[in-house]
Amino acid sequence: MNNKVIFLTTDSLGDGDKELGAQLLETFVNLLKQREVLPAAVFCVNRGVLALTEQSFASLHLKELEDKGVPVLACGTCVDYYNIREQLVAGEVSSMGHFMELSEKYEIMTIS
Image 1 (cartoon, one colour):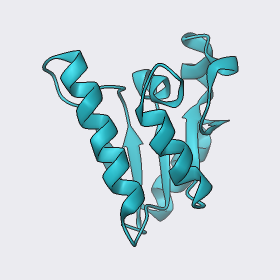
Image 2 (tube, one colour):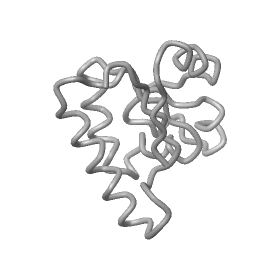
Image 3 (spheres, helix red, strand yellow):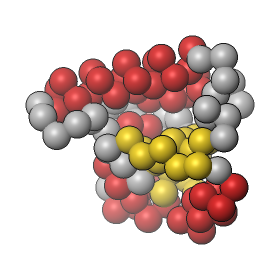
């Protein structure tokens, strides 16, 4: 996992029920933070940035992942689009350029 960047594109896993999807995302991130080998980074885009706010229980686990030294990054354009810059409880605002740099070094694992 340490050679992967998690590319989080949504605040709800899967195409079905949103509430179920939110629970699935929370479970995924909770299990991820408990692994011995952690990802190189988590990069959130589009609705994925909403997972970094109090609206999502996944934000608690993403914050813990961040506290363990994993960079948790939010697309600045997306944060501004959803007007949530002041609502972020985990992660830091980054850029698509930074994501491009990460993608040159690491394998990308897309979660959608």
